[in-house]
Length: 270
Image (spheres, rainbow, N blue to C red):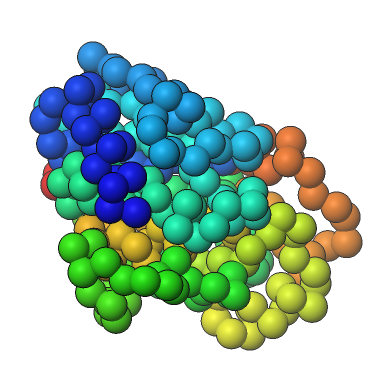
C-alpha cells in the first residue's frame, strides 16, 4: 500500500505542483461542476499508476486540478464503488491519494434514494451523519500507522462548521437545503421495500451505495468533510414501480444548478 501510494503521488506531483485547498468527489449526474475550474489539468484514471478504474454509469473517471475562487481545487470526476468488484482498500485508494497530497478539506457528493416523503427527487440534503450497512469496513486488515490510527473516532464524520457554512449559503441564496442521515448499502441491486422500511426505522433518511467508505478513511486521515446528497428517487416505500439509471441521472440534473452554486460559494469561504 505505502509503495503504491508513493508511486501514485510521485506521478501526480508532476501535474499538481501546489497543494490543493479543497478536494471534491462528484457523484452520479454531477460531472458538470468540473466545468467551473480555470486552468484545468485533466488526468484520466487509466493514466494514474495503481488507480482503480471507475466503471459506473456517468462516472467519467478523471482527476481534474484547477482554480476556483482563487483556490486550488482537485476534483475526482467519478468514484470507485464496492459493487464494481473492488476491495474496500481499492474503493478508498483515491482518499489515500488525497491524504498524500496534503488535502485537508473534502466535499463528497452522491445520488441517493429518499426514505422520507419530505425528501423529494431533486432536493439537496446536507449529510449530518451516516449508517454503514455495507457489511464491511475499509479499515479492516493491516493498519499503517503512517496513514492514521487503528481506531479513529467517527463522533462527527461530517464537519459541523462546514455544515453551518453551507446552510447559511443556502439560506442567503434561497436554496432549499435539508439535513439528513445517509445509509450506505453495497448494491448494485436497489433496495427492497422491506430493506427500505428497516433502514427508515433505524433512523436513515436516504440510502445509496457510496460515500461512507470514503468518509471513514478521510476521517482516519484527519480530513474535514462536507457531504451533500442529491435525492434522485423515492425508494420502494412509496411506490411499486422500478427505477432506472436514466431516471436517477435525470433527477440528479434537477439539482445541478443549486449544488453548483453552493459548492462555488462554499469554496470561497473556507
